Image (cartoon, rainbow, N blue to C red; front, side):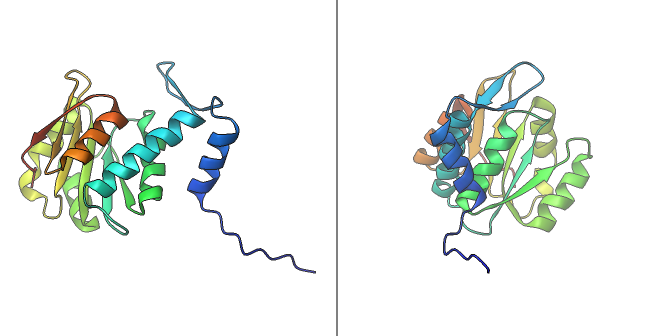
Length: 173
């Protein structure tokens, strides 16, 4: 006998349920000793998902993340799933020209870069980027992030998600 159910659970639903059940349970830890709880993960993912939608992104759009391994990764992946956008992870060990090819081939609309060298790398190839409309630069040495072409609500939500200040800058493309 086969059991069937009309309920469909998406991955993000499982994370939401776990955050309700045990919000203080640790879900991720980085090499510096920082940690993220289930509640923090879902909260950050929800804020970023709303920021992605407020920035005009929708189902099927592409968002790239260029960073070394960090606690932002699980939150960005979950946020993309919640917003219906597709994540395009960029390998930080590739050359900027290779990032350009990947971003253009994927039709990426928004790039999130974390770290001085990666922000500079994306800015260095900005003339080659054909589909990128928005850029979020997270620079740990300068706690002001830059978002291009975003609206005020999106900027506020990005600021809440990343816990840093936000400033408008010209689009890199």
